[in-house]
Image (tube, rainbow, N blue to C red; front, side):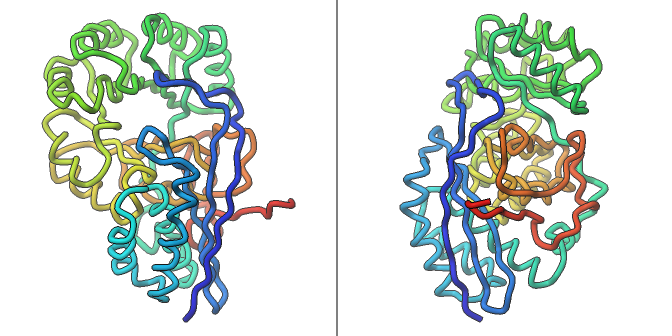
Length: 350
């Protein structure tokens, strides 16, 4: 078998400006990766790099040729372990770039076997939790309107970005228009440990599921301080990047939040899930603002999760890729009629 590879870069606008404690974005740059087998199937993946983790679209574009050269040299997409090891030896950083190739390979392998990826892994599609939908930081009226729109669209689990001097007012506003939704909040490292404990005490009255990354990842003892005193469960995101981080956060949080774009691929993600379970942690899979070309792959992990935060493609104004059906936020793997991840990319001219 011989393999041919290709990369396409696109800038995708968001439906609404997306604000977090570190800033606001209006678009995301995505690099789509194709791996074509000479016997027919094409594997599709995508990278959505985050500058917070040291990646940009330019750095991904720079290293993808080297990573794809590894794939072409190995020649057999089923040699996932060998390809992953060689990619890691070739490019030590740039996890989003390696993730794009990992997704494309898994898509191709499952297509060659004519099964959706979750069946290749032997997972039960009925075990997939619904995804949350994120309300980004904005003025109160805009956040109110975004919440009303999300509820009208059928989303019953919402995530609200915090990290301001009006956090309590934000959550009070959200609850006033969405009293019945499952709700959690994400501070994106914005609070000090003592500030976090005090705020969480106040936020607990709003019936929140948990609080995500209350303090900077560079302060592990601060995370422990909050965890030991928090009135709500704590999820670690920026503190949880790769497999090696799981034992480091195990006594500092309740939930490990992994993301494909920061861990480096689907095999690493599955190892992280297993390690988190072994340490007694619940597991969530989050995302960046991404296309279905990568979100679809993460959806196939959903049966292994307690929580899914896979709304990256739902936040786009227009996604050139179709993926796993998510009516009302429900990850409908059983309704997927295509093999592989289920992602399909329209041509640039469509």
